[in-house]
Length: 115
Length: 112
Image (cartoon, rainbow over all chains, first blue to last red; front, side, top):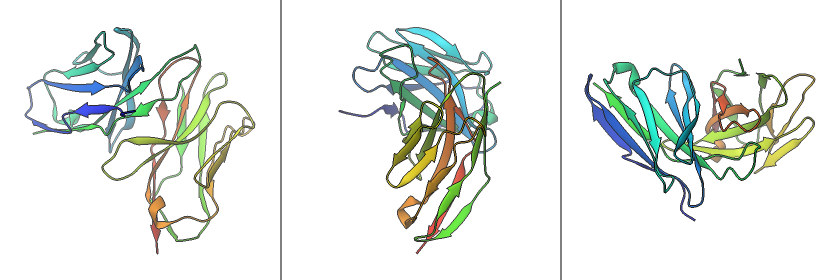
């Protein structure tokens, strides 16, 4: 079974631009979560989507948004990029078979550099 | 809010040495606890987990025991290898929320 895939793997943007990152979960997984990893702040939860609905959200400004499609693929968008948005963005998927926590499987990440 | 504290690195060891990476947590209720590992240039891989008090998670020679009385989940390995060099993250999740709260990570460097 293929793992979580993220595209693109590397991205360079300039301040003020916007960017869209894509995540394809493991087949059959319905929950997709996004995390931001930076040297200063570590790993921080952005949001989680399940059945095309945002189910959980972290403490990030409204410039960060996401969506999920009917095939469970997810995108996240960052508008008006700032230098501090430079980070590794990780996507994770899980099956979510019941009401307990379900193991998340991570993709390799998208490395975003904002100049 | 929920938080995870783990020892700062880097931890530098010689091959076959004993490893301990400390992790303590603050959370309401009874979280599930995890150790993830990140190799250079890669995403996170689940190393082991424990879902209730006194559970011991184990994988690839690594072990960690969920200690509710000390709110700890320390990672141990009896004999490390060069291939264990990576960054290790302690994390928790509560209830049905698919949200992991991570510690800051501990870099492990193992020399031959």
